[in-house]
Image 1 (cartoon, rainbow, N blue to C red):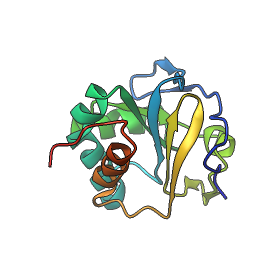
Image 2: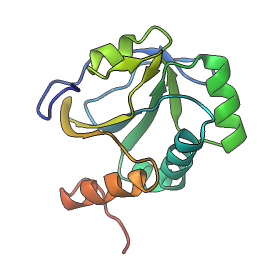
Image 3: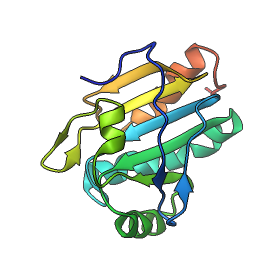
Length: 151
């Protein structure tokens, strides 16, 4: 079972697709989405759609992080192939998934998304369907006034 809404956001650090150490600052707003594996159909759809909406997230000050158990090299190839503008965090030992209470089965994190604001989890999406998810998260953020979305 994933962290509940209202939980403190865990402090995490990991290497991104460029091999740079990233320590997300959750004092602002962020979306952290866990996905099973780079370059698979569902994961590609989800990543590309987060990237398609990335300008809206960024303009609102909402950081986006994708997390999987794949390594830096896999993330580098995946991000380059799909021209992704946000950080993909490598979690090969499952420590980030564990910090968020995201199950890892057969070495792959279960598809789960967290919305964080002011160091607190304000939204949790479990059993995510990749197609349309980035748009749905944006819509939900607009409903609570975190982002403005053109109709």
